[in-house]
Image (tube, rainbow, N blue to C red; front, side, top):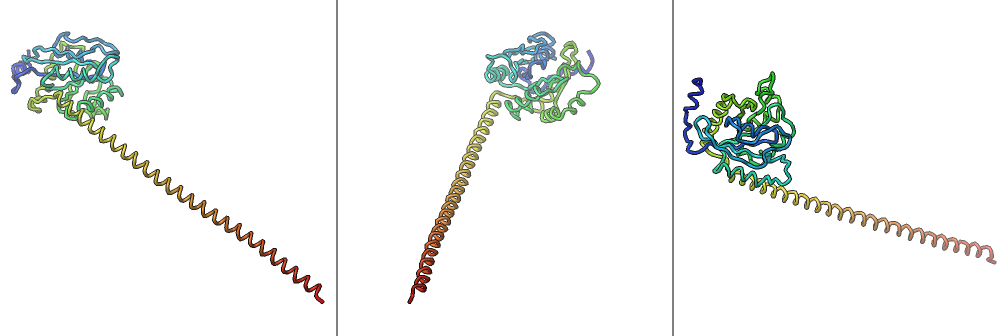
Length: 295
């Protein structure tokens, strides 16, 4: 074993009095269970290539990794599960209880070769459900490293603005795994080194169920405020429409009344004009007759 391996394996991280708890998160086919198996160098989680989720419930496994007790919680696909009886919220709470009092690190598993709308949808769900607080506990683990060809991992990340932005929000913490080469222990050593640094940065704090519930509470409060705002805006719109309608109806009514008054006056003038003409004609006729028949 090389010196670097010996020095790492003989190092005891200060502040560790309990198991190191790692929570695996990812969508179906990302390689969550295989990543857990690679960490432990054994088949402790059911894993196979499948388009449907193999893992249906959360499962925790504890073993020694580099002379340290490590507990990994494997999880189902909380976002895109195809199981009709799957209760996402209940199972997610169970996952966090399994790593009680909380997860030191959330390993968010993404396939290295693709970053589709499904992957984007999953990390959007992850940020919404776990909250911004979770990102300081998150390390992105890219699986299927065997599929990478010419470009480096950094180049592949930078080529995708959405992925690059998410990695930045996670503090540029990422690692790659070749889950088809579990015997490659160097990749596990490097992952554990990055985990050590993250745990030290967070002063051995954990992401807990209470943090997620607080995120839920804040989201529900935000949604309640938003609903109330939309209702106020809707009521304001209705009030404006009602006022505008009342003004328009009143103006149309007044215009109609004015039109009717004008029409009545014109009829009145026309009628009296005709009467005057008749009277004038009659008087004229009388005068003419009087002149004709005067002695």
